[in-house]
Structure formats: structure tokens, C-alpha cells
Image 1 (tube, rainbow, N blue to C red):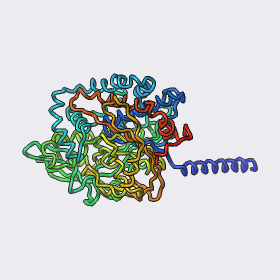
Image 2 (image 1 turned 180 degrees about the horizontal axis):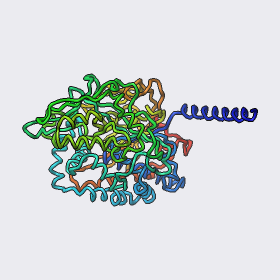
Image 3 (image 1 turned 180 degrees about the vertical axis):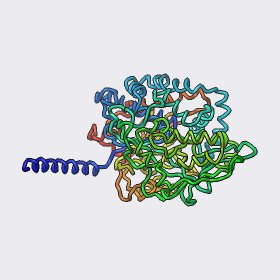
Image 4 (image 1 turned 90 degrees about the horizontal axis):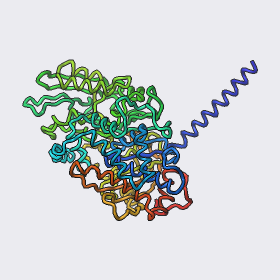
Length: 566
């Protein structure tokens, strides 16, 4: 008996030590790498930055130009990505082929553009097989759509929209072809699947926006607006006062297996949207009627997103994060005849189905409605709470807010801006910011931080250290770095409590790509090379050693810190 008590006592002490260690680990908070959305520009920017940083470490004999040996991303236990950066993260985390490309660019930086062009861009263009004449025809339509949906639009957004419209595929198919052709990621790859060794155990947040439209802007699932009948099937929330966009994220502990559950809440707990149901209405000539789904805290959709996270298909999860035209479903008559072109293709649909089938069941049910609108097909939409998930940029395009909600108290955010050092994607997270440029983003979702003010933030960013850009660059215009301290505000939509101190490091890489025709797509190859060259430039060597690399690595390589970092 005494021996049993001794063993039990030792086990209790051991358990206490483990608990204290776990509590201490939690108390340290998290360090997050967040990456702004931006389609192909984001992926090219992220690729150039990572390859350049690896090359800089190799140049200083710190490591081989491999991600595993460098430890470059070792200290980041949270990775939060949006849109094109979610494409980048999926390929970097799950694809040996893409990792080899990035490491190859780091090993031979003078051929970075050729490597990216041959192994990524050309592979993508060969797979999509677009007709240039068709692309040019869609360009004018794309410009109209981008301006209506985003409130503004740069050439990259217009180009990406024209590219998508010209492909004739659904957004899910578009993203699948991209990931498969450039990184060998096929339909069988799931969120909990095998990843690179260095990434195992990190938490990946795939940021997106859950679309719960209201009576003012119903979400259209099916429309034959181009026909005289003008019939449609749509859905709305039963609460007319709720915002129609909510921040959400799929999450996984990388490498945890298909049976793994999500480590982070899909949406902030306690949101009023939980008590709201969805109403599905048809005014089609074939069937006029409605059906009601149960409140969202009962329909198991979010429960199943978390419980079966490891089984969710990787390409469809990534598609939700990047569906920048998905909000076309709430445009109603503003889109006119373009509804017929966009609704069924631009919005990824999801359901409450278990076992990782949330996307497949939703797509099947939407296809059934498109084939025949009747009482049963509409009822099935309600039974499985089919709704749209769209680009994370509709809520927070930087990935910062979801990372902070997941526990990060230090964030490195990588931004890709158009032309200048104005960083609008993060300005809106701070108090006093102007309304979001996208007219459909609800202002009720912000701010995320209570200090500094957006004006103070802009002043701080205006004092960013600007890396010297080599004279022969064509597209890279700004490479800016700054750091700041922020304090969180209470934000129920993201699930953030007030009063937390967060250190934010900002890397803003701006470019001006003259993309007007399909043949100019290889300009992104040149952008990756220009980013690498800037990092390796002798003019920037001291700053890269003293500041840029330590931001990635945590512990300073040099004791010198640049005073221009605030």
C-alpha cells in the first residue's frame, strides 16, 4: 500500500509540473506570422521575401539555404493567411515541389526570376490554357465587377478577375488547378495531411469570411436573371440587424492527421449570429416557397468545421480564403445580367455536413437547385444550412486580428501594397480610420486595437526604414519595415479582449505591375527576383543583418538595432 501511495504521489507531482509548464507556456503568448491577401501579387511577394531572407542567411554563412536548417520560421507558432497568401502557405507547408522552388531561388538568387517563371508561372499558364482573345474580352467586364465589389481596384485585381472569368471554371476549380499545377496538391490532400517537418505542430489559420446576408442584401444561390422570368433562390439571416459578413477561420495543428480537430474556434464564441437561423426563399416559376434552417448554434455547421477539420479538403479551404469575387452573391440588381455569369461560380458554398463533407455536400445541393428548383431541393439547402464563405479580405485582409484572437502577442505581418507605402489593410484595425474602401465591409467589425490611433500609426509607418531598391528594378517600388506597440480593444466579432499588449512588426512590399495582357503574367517572376535582389543588396546589408533577420529569428544576430525602428 505504501508503495502505491509513493507511486501515486510521484505521479501527482509529475502531473502538477506538467500543468504548471503548460500554464507557463500559455502565459507566454504566441508569435504569429501573418500574410496579407492579394492574389498572385501576394504569392509572388511572399515567395521573394522568403527566398531573399534565406539567401541572406546563407550569404552570412548562418545556414544552408533551406527552410529547415535556417530556422527562419521556427519561432512562429501561429501562421495566419488570407487570399493569395493562403495559396502561398498551402504550397509552402504541404508541397515539397514548391519548397524546392523557394529554396532553389535562395541558393541561386541571380536566377530567381527564371526559376519562378519556369517552375510556377509557366506551369500555371499551361494548365489553365486560356485564349488571349477571350481574356481581353473579359477585361472590361472584370474592371466593372472589381470596382462594384471592392469599391476600388488596382490592375492586379482587375487582371485576376479577368483571368478567372476567362477560365470558365468555378472558383473551387480555379484554385484546385492553381495548387495542382504549381505544387502537385491534388483533391486528395486534406487539411490534416502531411506537411514539411519544420512546420509540424504550428497552428495555421486560413482566414475567410462567413456570409450571412440580411433582408437588405439577400445571398443569391441560384439566379436566371438573364431570362424574362428573373427567378432566384436566395437565403437570409432571420435577424435583419446583423452584419452580413463575419470573420472566420479554418484552423489546424499542422501535421496532426485527418482525424484532428481544430485548435482554434471557427468564429468568436457568443456572437449574436448563433441564435439566428437562415431562411431560404424561392420565387422561381417552378416553385415559390421558403424553408428555415435551425439557429446556427444548433445546426452543427461550425461544430463540424472544428470536429472534422483534419478531413476538410485543402484546396476548397484555401478557395474560401481567396474568393475575392464571392460577395457578388449579395449584389442583387446592382450586378444586373452579370449575376448569371457570377453567382454559381464565384462563391464557394459550404454546409453543415460532417466527416469533412461540408463542401462536397453543399456543391451537390447547389447543383441540384440549378438543375431543378422545387420544394425538395430548396428544403435540402435548409437542412444542411448551405451558405457562402468568401475572401478573408472582406473582414481583415491582413490576418492580424485572427492571429491576435488566437493568442498572439507578437505579430510579423507581411503586406503587399500597390505602388506606395500606404497600408490601408491594417489602418482599419485602429481607431479613427476612414471607412473601408470596400463598401460591403461592415464598419461594426472594427476597431481591433484601441491604440495607437490610425493617424499615429500612419505617422509611425511614414518613419519606416526604407530599403534601398536597386536602380534596375521595374516593378518593386517600396520595401519598408517598422515596428510598433499596440493595445487591443474589446472586439466581440473577432473574440478579442481589451487591454492586451501586442508588438506588431510590419514589412510592406509595394509594387507596380503593368499587367494588361495575358502575356504579361511573367511580370510576377521579375517581382520575386527584385525582392530577392533588394534584400541581398550591399546597401541594405547592415540593416538586413541587424533588423530584418532578427525580426524573423527573434534573438538578434547583432546587438545593434536600427533606431529608425519605432
